[in-house]
Structures are given as structure tokens and as C-alpha cells.
Image 1 (cartoon, helix red, strand yellow):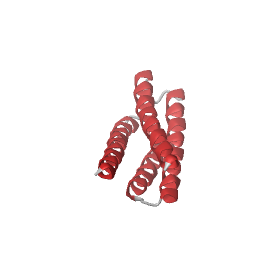
Image 2 (cartoon, one colour; image 1 turned 60 degrees about the vertical axis):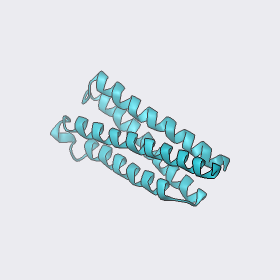
Image 3 (cartoon, one colour; image 1 turned 120 degrees about the vertical axis):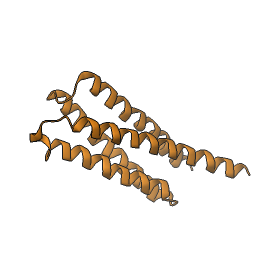
Length: 126
């Protein structure tokens, strides 16, 4: 019974990071619509690519039972988040987004990174 509670808590955490990541995708898609048309096939495409590859890795990690495979997907997910951070910084530097957008976007990414760090740590302890 104790193991059941533990597994339930893990899936609850996985669900929270998944929901938070979907929120990030919705926010990001709303923001990139306002970018100049000249960025549609460059920075916008890179942002969307990072988001959707990240989503794929997150889904694989949630479904994966093998610890090594799970860690592989979580690390790839972390890499996508780091790429996204760079894209957001570039967007701010080139003034495609406001300071408020930059702050909100960065906060969403940081929240997900913190959740992910905890998840990776819990995988390493097992």
C-alpha cells in the first residue's frame, strides 16, 4: 500500500510538470505570433522546435520505466529547456518581447527547470 501512495505521488508530480509545460507552450505560441515576419523561419521556428521536442522528451520520460532511459529523456528535456532560455534571451535582446513578457516567460521556464531538477534527483536516488 505504501508503494502505491509513492507511485501516486510520482505520477502527480509528473502531471504537474506536464501541465506546467503545456502552459509554457500556450504562452510561447501566443508570444511568437507577435514576432516580425522576418523571424518566422528562424527564431520562431527554433523556439517552436525546442518546445515540441521538449514535449516529446517529457512524454517519453513520463511513460518510461527503465531508470537509465528515463534519465536520458529527462536530460534531453533539460537541454531543450536550456535552448529555450537562450531563445528567450535573444528575443528580449532584439526587443521582440517586452520586459514583462521576458519576466513571465523566464519564470515559467524556471519553474519547470526546478520541477525537473527535483525529478532527476529523485531518479538518481533510486
